[in-house]
Length: 530
Image (cartoon, rainbow, N blue to C red; front, side):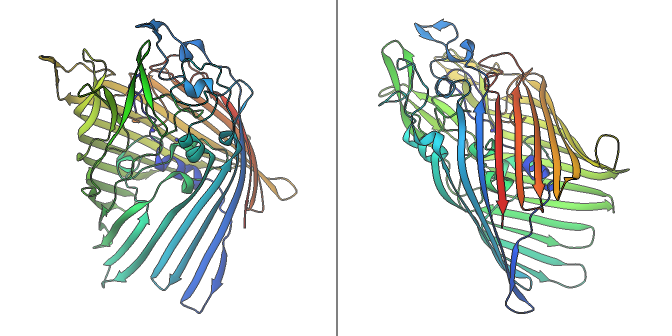
């Protein structure tokens, strides 16, 4: 809710920030508490408490926990722990969480603060693993790693903590500035990775938790951001990050983890019978160097054009094998990737139609080598088109919200990898790939005394190629990947919500293109805001 997956070289999928924001905007928001110190100064606050449970409804597929034997080992030995740790009909979440938010305002200035905490019983006890010979950890084979118990089991975390201010500069000019822990997200992407995906990290573990909100998923980082309104038609924007933060991936052994060597808790990989290669740490970018500028121009009152240029460090990891002085593998985050982008947004009748074009220079892309898939730098172009529309009363529902997006990715070029006197530049994945996704919310107000019903239906499908840029199509992996979600959320007085959902992975099991094919699950959640 973020990479590329092979037996040894896998990373979690990229969560699309704007997708979850779109979902949030289609939901009713609970009113916050408010206290006025005087006419100019006030404080808003509210807290949300959520209980969520998830249950696996399919058993592990042999193709994803074993596979053929390669070099004397099961092909999936370095990618099976998350699958083996949960039996059919077993709980994958049993979580109580809380989110607190507050905003202090004084005229055009203020301070925003938020924090969350949770406890998940599933990750604080033993799991269902019954294969001690294949588990990628030391200690008790049916216990989660300390990292999984922390990232998935119990945590308290600061989210937003930033000051903001606004100044009128006369006529139509205005300057707005924010400083501190915050989320910056530009562009027009909904579900897939556009400009916004390069601007900040996300928490993959929260994206699949029942009842989680966008505020839990997008991770603020220390930065300064500004927007300068020059005229009624023209505005400039910019940001500079003060600290590097990567995506928080699914910990090794957690339910949605598809790699035992990438993610919190990784310890070693199996290379041959009786031979393990230990984890050697991370190769991380510097804290500085990430920032960007943008411009928006209103061509007409209904047509907005945007231009963007960013320098960023990759939020997804790549695996690097080092043979000397002793064999180890490390997790590397590529730095100083350049992104140039453009967007357009307009109204066509009752629909909001948008498009986004991005070009990335120096982005990590896997190529085939004699040592296996290896990450190198390359250039890639991505195109996204989306539509958002609300339909009024019909035979189907009192109101219907639709959000849909289609994406296309093309790899322009890659830097050849030099290894053993040979040069390698053949792509491990596809040069061209495409996918689409849509979300429909059916609204039924007052279905019974003061209770409203919303029925969310989402469908995602990778229709061509295996994306070579990590997380280009959100939660989708390779061609033929299909994900269907059906839910029902009952809301009372905008502050109590009870919901359930069925989440189905409908592709055949394939370690490369459909590594989550056997992990369909159902969820139940209850949420109260006060």
